[in-house]
Every structure is written in C-alpha cells, then in structure tokens.
Amino acid sequence: MIRLPLLLSLALAVGAVSSPVAAEGPDGIGFAQAEEGTWWCRGGDADATLACARAKCTDESGGQECFATRWCFPAGWSGLMVAWLPEFHSTHVVCGMPGEAATRAALRAICEKTPEFTRCDLVRLIDPDGTEQEVDESIEPYGAAE
Image 1 (cartoon, rainbow, N blue to C red):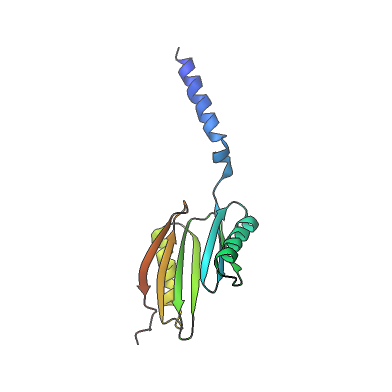
Image 2 (cartoon, one colour):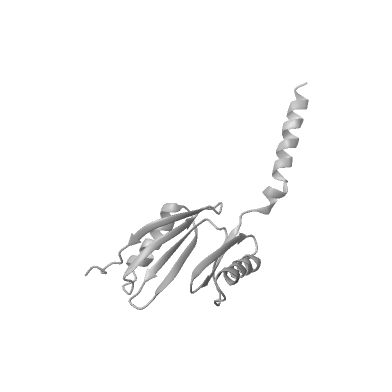
C-alpha cells in the first residue's frame, strides 16, 4: 500500500524535471536601440533574441536605423538610464544583474563616475521574469553641481 503513493510521487517528480518547461532553461535578454528609444526581447538564443529586438525597433522607431546593443545570459535584472550631456543624450543599459539593488547601483556608478554627464535619469527596470517597472529617479553625476 505504501509503495503506490511512493511510486506516484516519484513519477510526478520525474515528469516535472523532464518537462519541456524545465528543459528550456533560463532566458537571455537582448536590446536594440535607435535615436528615439530602446527595445528588448527575451530568448535562449543570442542571434534570434537580438534579431527580435531589432525587428521591434525597426517596426516602432519610425524608420530610424536600429542597432543591437546588449545581450545578457541569463537575463537577470536589467535597467535603462538616460544620460544627459551638454549637446545630446544617450541611453545606457545594464543587464544580467543579480537583483534590483545591484542594477540601481551599477547605473548610479556609471553616472557618478562619468564627469561628462550633466544628469542621469533611471527610467526602467526589468525583472528576471521580464516584467517592466517604470522608474522616475534622477542621479546627479559626481561633480555636476560644482
């Protein structure tokens, strides 16, 4: 009698481990950028994921030229920051980070250690599941107020 529940439990455990979902493994994340924005996709293959991000960029950027700019595997946490310079701005992306705090700290360090930046705006975080979180946080570069 005890053997039947044990066998059923074992069969369920083996089925869960060998399921297609478990076999897929973690996703990576790829980013593409144009003058007007940054687009991203998730997937297990770098080439396909970056092609997806470039396709989104091409479709949504109004015909601007799009460039694949970043790939991380596994995706981890990602963050996007707009860095302002006297004449123009640029978007910086970090990905593959171990947590939200590490993502924020990495972007803060980039901003604070780049004397050419006049201001940085943290605009988006993406968690390991691909959920976006809009952020409205400004960072003052080291020495910008001087």
